[in-house]
Length: 387
Image (tube, rainbow, N blue to C red; front, top):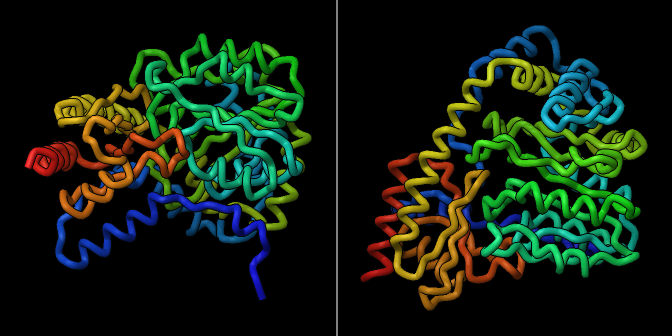
């Protein structure tokens, strides 16, 4: 028996592969500073944990509605409406176990073989993986370092064809930490407003930003919300990665299709986890605010440190918790350097090419680690690069 041919077209997340390699080195006695995994190193807020405990005691341990509990979906609709300035009904909200189903299910529901999908490159690797898996055509859109890792708008315009079925945006962005400027979002909206195209706007890092103004969502542009899928969730801003709780907001006709796929695969999202999510989104936001403030402190110090390393050039990221330095000046490939830093310097990071071909020459560091460990990582890399 052989696997279906489509399995040859599906990819993985390299971060988890590097984590396994780093753990194996630690088991041999080597000290490793983990800057490879995109996971907040903070605890889930106490009131969220308490809500989950209470839910267990109160019997929230059975099947729930496939789309999510109505009061939770209403809270999400209210939150998205107030933060994006758009009307959102409960029928548009799909609650799912994590953010990835809001990539997988809408793509599965919408894409035919040969349809074209424009997506950021370097970008979250699951975008390209799912496009290939479904037999659609990936159209990578290079993120330009000189533009703060935003698109070249002329190249984007030239890439649009009659076969363009979907456009994927991610801001703040993984792996670069870039935020698409409001002016660029408006320009993209003007190009897409009159096209028969769906926009998947991945806003999972939308509340982790460091400028005074929040990242601008394309859904806020006139006439765009009705052709957008918002991907958001609780993993990043509430440090709830292991809870597996995300949601999508999309046109009701597409939400119906997503719920069909959900019932065929997961049945529903865990009931007690939804109670925790309700407490997170409607309760105190102090922990989230403190976390973002600490990420800013780490970003400032870590990026400044990277820019003192020989051969490194790193832009100051405007959001998320990633630094994405250009390392071509070291004279090594990014693949070789990432491996050397793990095995010889004890710093786990990711080759930028793990996020697409246009990530070649860059390395991704997650600064979701303590300030002290980040400064230690800089010094370890300095010693290795200058020895």
